[in-house]
Amino acid sequence: MNIGLFGGSFDPIHHGHLALARAAKERYELGRIYFVPASVPPHKQKQPLSPYFHRYAMVVLATMGEKAFVPSLLEAPGAATGNGPGGRNQPAANYSIDTVQRLKQSLKKID
Image (cartoon, rainbow, N blue to C red; front, side):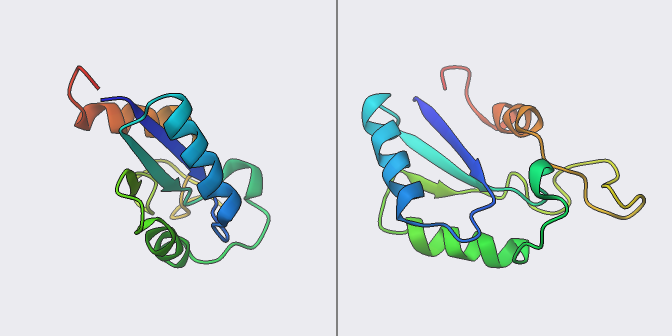
């Protein structure tokens, strides 16, 4: 199955995100698109963000009408390892390569 990975801060998720995902699904014949809210987006570490699980809940609500859209916890707090910008006990920034590697571990070779 062809799978799409759509990451972002989703603060908030909006119609533009959903329209882009629908277009990608059609264009690339994707069977599933994982919406992955970033716990700590590397480019927004100094900006205030809504709490992760509030943003995740917004993704769940926004995608519930689309069977192929799957809210994902791949970048939930604790999923990434390392220290964040503030040192110890701070969540690490989420980078796409790490997320893709975590996702690949859970997929079949054909995906």
